[in-house]
Length: 420
Image (tube, rainbow, N blue to C red; front, side, top):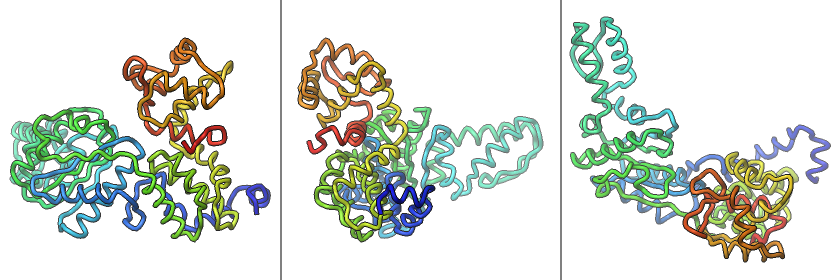
């Protein structure tokens, strides 16, 4: 049954959703969440091995960084799972940061394991500043009897919570692992500096407690606020894009698990437009597989991938769609769209204006001179991240979001040469 017939007999998509849910396809192809199960994790063998080696070496901690969409969180989850299950008896804590987090909130759970209740300490400090009588605080011994003395004590304890060396002393004999994901979300770079200092202190005192940092960054120093002394004990791993063979393995294993068959042409199309990003491979494979399951088909060809593309675009991250729409929106010309598409087809991380002009001619069958290009660049290009393209040097550019070329190619699959 075609999608059109399904829409007529199942206007709200309930039957379709029932078939898809029963198939388990959304647990196999997972573009919207990190992978937590080793059975669904493919590729990245060398990176996992290196991370486990770093975390299992006394005095060493780990930092994993790279672009959005390359699979950092999934890799961190799997490396942590393997390390704890096979080589360590320690306890694992996972902290996914957001803009409200800071040094204290990141360390809250590990400190609670060694008897330091941050929330209680902060609560007691606030009460003490109000001049009310207090009780003792677990983990610090002794009741506090005088208001004046207690105020001083509470302020002291609260201050110590901000000290990396004090926190390290509390964790010095604790066998555990703290996975800090999305470290780049922290607003205050001072908190990143404190985390780096904590890692140095833990290494210096030989603590078995390990810290595993993960975040979006161009360099490892971006996530540690350039701490000068942490390099010897914090091993950095930059996670790049996946190879075509690794992306193809995601589809191969998925089709086996689901009892489906992607044709070689369909696999090549998905891998080509994904440009090394597993997020897009999962997304396109998911949408194509959902349609096949809903139509009770077992084979997925290239036309099925193309038909699923629009739903894949609609299901992409809102930030990508907004930036792309803002760049290309114009009531008087399609040239913004044509220039962005030409830049996306180039497929290189950096490109020159001359390369862009050549690609524009190849893609659209007409020339564009530099003066005309500069006029459109006024809206498309900036020195920072305010626009879709960034100027790196005179005549040299790149996309601000490295995933954007893949998104553009997926959005324009019908008119662009996506096999290049």
